[in-house]
Length: 94
Image (cartoon, one colour):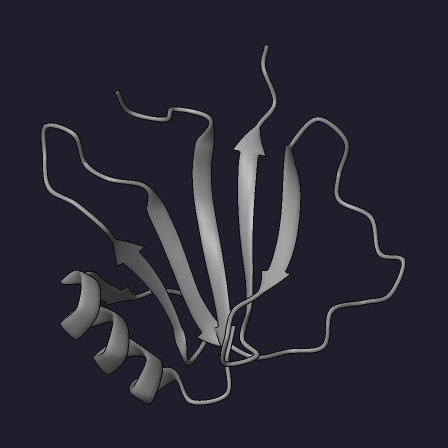
């Protein structure tokens, strides 16, 4: 049964090219450049299911105490075993 609560995830890394190679080989994810340099949309699956949308971007400092715009989404950040910060978000229910 699919988990439709997860809308998107983000992974922040020091080496975008190394991370792209790793995730492509391990999970067969596809990457599409989008927006600023070293920012990619991640395609985790094909139609009809489509997978969960992801983002891969160069590590940046998260602003301490910064707030998200209300009612956009709920975001949680976590650190993986290599020290990369990743985020997941859940869309607010209407």
